[in-house]
Length: 397
Ligand code: 13P
Ligand code: SF4
Picture 1: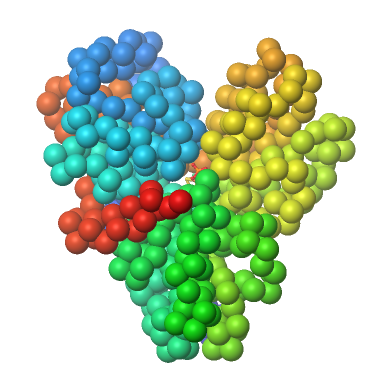
Picture 2 (picture 1 turned 180 degrees about the horizontal axis):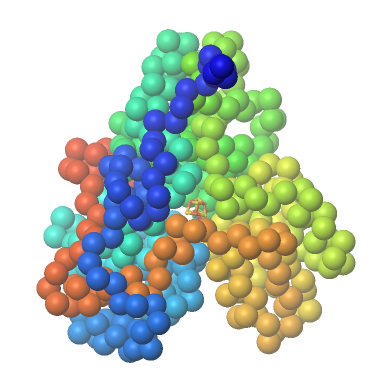
């Protein structure tokens, strides 16, 4: 006897690839990594990375996202959140190679924002982002058809989180929308609503992180939870009625970050009990109930600045990726700032962690030997529309 599938649930169109194996060109997880990697046990890895970087000199510029491992951050020329790194990449037109220690969508954005003669390298092509994978170009095109049939597409401005593929960014640019990051989501939404629908009935289609969209709309723009609906790409019509679509102000894509999604109300309650007087500071990719229970909310860059400004003797529980939290705990330990991870269990971003010292050494040595490896290159048509959306973000007031 077979078990019937619920009629309205479609299987995800993305194959579940093993990380670093096989390929799906539509997937953020990329393809398998060619080349012979140095052994992680090689005692000379640090010296080799240093020597390769020195050989390359100004020809290479290494960017490191805050969630990268310490062993990689050590070789970054700049570190930052995704917004800062996008700007930093665009500000280095003289660098022949941009080595992006981050994930695939960040490297794509760097390629879009840098010159045609510059090459963007992702040391491990399997460093994708599961959230970005949750919105494919086909699904988003279908969603737009649903909005068009419901008569709301004309009034809808797409706002896409940086954590999305170049295809989604191009869709956003083509339909008059903007990209945002967690540090400028509020300004992006204000901009989008100011575009206005033809009858002052503007809506935003927010892709792909429902939590960042909801948290920004409710916390920063004063909307109610009822103003937000969730579009499920696995259900016909997104699982929404025409009336629901017409009544909504925010149409949130049903995507989320599997790392930040782990923090729960229970994590907040438990840490407050364990550490009296603790300040809870979380990333806006956390669920709304977690953000509502926290004391402070902000992007990775904001989290760092808040801890820099915190007084000695203060206590902090941080709800974001563990590499960053651990680095901050070590950095501020001698200033008598107690910094702990919000959850009890380990919570690295596994794809960010794909970039390790062996991959970085391999990429730098290959470049120094004149071999361009793991280049991330967005096709010109996609690039032109995606650039429009990224440049709208960079020029937000
Ligand atoms: P930031 O925009 O804060 O850098 O976050 C990027 C990211 O991937 C968070 O999960
Ligand atoms: Fe993607 Fe989440 Fe990892 Fe950020 S932390 S790169 S959103 S999976």
